[in-house]
Amino acid sequence: MMRLIEREPRGYLTAGQDLVMAGYAGWEGSGRIARERETELLARFSREYVRKMQQTSFAAIDSSSVPWQEYGATEWEEVGEGGIFTALWNLSGAYKSGFEVDLHRILVRQETIEVCETYDLNPYRLYSKECVLAAADNGLHLVQRLKAAGIEAAVIGVIKPGIKREIFYGDVRGFLERPREDEIHHIMRRKANEGKDFGSHGEEQQN
Image 1 (tube, one colour):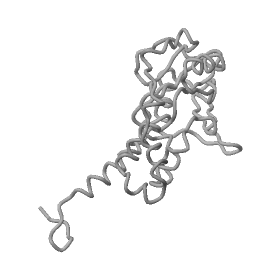
Image 2 (cartoon, rainbow, N blue to C red; image 1 turned 120 degrees about the vertical axis):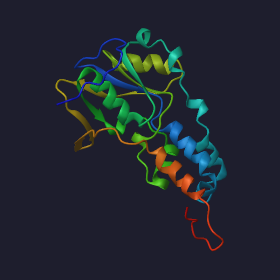
Image 3 (spheres, rainbow, N blue to C red; image 1 turned 45 degrees about the vertical axis):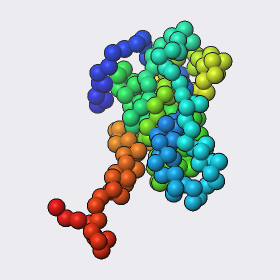
Image 4 (tube, rainbow, N blue to C red; image 1 turned 30 degrees about the vertical axis):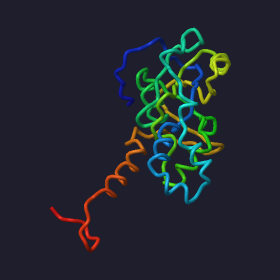
């Protein structure tokens, strides 16, 4: 049984609608990681490419200034902690609706993929500030309006009857799992561990 996610509705969401994402999955999170782990990344990539990994501002979306309803969105969810997968879980849960999403269509920059592969992270569960998930009666129309406003967007799936949250990639299909801890925390814990005090012989001091 799907548990209802309590959330103030902005409009409506119903079976048959398109799911649209605006912005890039994990872009803000991978940028933070690239700034924190610059030295390590410079050992694998050129300085120019690492700087590109670090610069997230050019792709930022000020979601409060976008006229979502005017553009054709009937409901939307800002993506943040937990990434695009958590946003999908929360938006569908708010309406107790299922969906079908093509993983291949989710917008992810190559720089984010490189960072995630370096640290074995899932870009779809990585912090994605200034990325938005929306429902629309005509997803292509919404995408066109967003692109005309300079915002990268794509139709990534469709709202389905029932409660199944399906993710597919080619012939491989599966179900979206419950939200997990954001992937960025793995890197933050690693940084915290590196900052622990060590004794004169390299052994960690005991309290």
